[in-house]
Length: 373
Image (cartoon, rainbow, N blue to C red; front, side):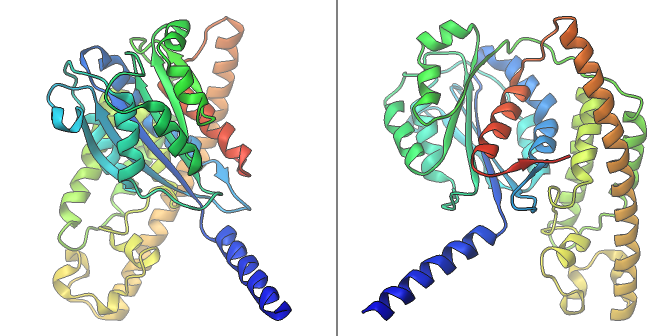
């Protein structure tokens, strides 16, 4: 009997250790109110999405950087089905950051009924949330109508989230006290999440830096190291370029933030369509890939020639990633100084992105992550 208990205890300890050593995840589901009054919120999110990604990328757990998965929903839009409580899942949890950008830039507002409890419930049911307590799991819901509307009780969904270690964080687009009266604060605290209020109509004032232009130039060179393979290769390569253009249409600072995110191999992983990531991170063996799957540059070559070409591209990519990373460090130091000056002048930076970043870092540190540069 003692031996059985010992073996069982050893098994539990071994399983716990293995779980702790497995690669960590930061999972973030963002639920946007896309009713008529929320254009400003969507614009803020477009401006801040790459800043949020870069902030998450500073986290470390036992010396290892976590992977990032993002899901997107929108709700409260008359174009959506009333049978689904005016809710649509745009993306399940994914590490495909170009797809996240594409869906975000495709959002359009239209008047509707905002059922917060229902959309939270959908995200809890639909998404493949991790069961590991050392993975950070965050829901962000943003809107400006009463939180307790609709057929689903938000309190019950909050209990469900809390039981699974998922933090619900609420962002009320309006006056702080009004958000409290409309239950947005309660919607956060019941799962130990954070409540924020923002002025969603406020335009983001980006800090322009002397490093943005050069970072974006290196980004253009970095793009040339991506070679699409398989049926998705050409489409996803085009998407990479179009999302650069979407970021630039917002501002050169946003494009610089995107370029910095793309320079981080643990964050910007395209193994599903890029031949380098497929071999280095996706376990693909180029010697076993069918000729028709390969990028044109690799076709008709011997295995040795393919391997040599892979190494040349790999070195070029690492070179551009390193150059962007070096400039990104200088850029952030410049921004930090500018933000200090703004704070001294009484100018507050308070928007969708700062709310998300603040709560992610706080909750991550609470469960054992550290923030690194």
